Amino acid sequence: MKIIDLRSDTVTLPTQTMKDALYHAELGDDVFGEDPSTNRLQEIASELMGKEASLLVPSGTMGNLICTLTHCARGEEVILGNMSHMFLYEAGGMSALGGIQPHIIPNQLDGTMSLEDIEAAIRGDNIHFPRTRLICLENTHNRCNGSPLTPEYIDSVAALARRYGLLVHLDGARIFNAAVALRVNIKELTRGVDSLIFCLSKGLSAPVGSMVCGSREFIAEALRIRKVLGGGMRQSGVIAAAGIIALEQMVDRLAEDHANARRLAEGIARIPGLSIDLAGVKTNIIYFDLVSDQPTNDEFVIRLGQKGIKLLPTGSSRFRMVTHHGISTEDIDATLVALTEVMEET
Ligand SMILES: *Cc1c(COP(=O)(O)O)cnc(C)c1O
Image (cartoon, rainbow, N blue to C red):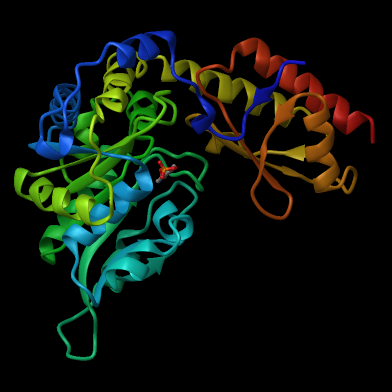
């Protein structure tokens, strides 16, 4: 039976071109700065993002942590959304390892935080208060329907930050999905921020790795923090070689994932007992609700599993599906047939 795995775009496997590239990669010791493939990937990433420098790191989580630890001192505060990955899913790293306090404010359904809420969360100069240092944005916004943040919104947050002498970090795990969905040059999404991360290992299909990007000075400090965290890698060119292919060959095709997500969402909207907000579907992530009593949430997941469909339960009766390289339009149609059968059988 064919397995159609819609849990996440992290399940993507490296392409044959990536395997060939990492097999033949030119290697050296990256802790000495001597891995040619890693150096090349870092140049490509900096250039693409319009930043002076960048750094290969093992994961997006480590990348975000490196950025917060580089920007903030102990006791300082970071403003971020209550639905953000950095707040929900990074094991409290900034507090645990940096003594940094998250100050959460509401995410809107489109992944933004209102400028009013951000401004109200900025601390005044008072001996009682922690010092606000950093504002974090997420693009696309994982928990908020995979929504892309627009250049205009990011610029407005950056302008607010500058007025208060604050820094902006962008968790751009899926920033290429945002650029493709909005049809903008990626630099428009990064020009206002002081640092960003993006993942090579999600929709871009590389096996491992994320990039941290920022000024030369910032990356020099981030390099030290990466070493502290045990993220200094040696012949990391085997990772970087696949990452280069990810950036060169796998970006434009994300539009297919978005089209498949839309097809899937529109199909789900027609199935009795399932409910989805079609207007919210903009990239490769969809959330929908099981609104009938039968099947139960657990039965729903089990029966789909029996038909080869994997999805992610994300709370009470809500489920997530993510389209990616390796999920074809035929797979989407097969998924819709399976969903219809599961709902009709009960
Ligand atoms: C996946 C993800 C991360 C973390 O990346 P890992 O490589 O899984 O550690 C960070 N932010 C967002 C929005 C993500 O979706």
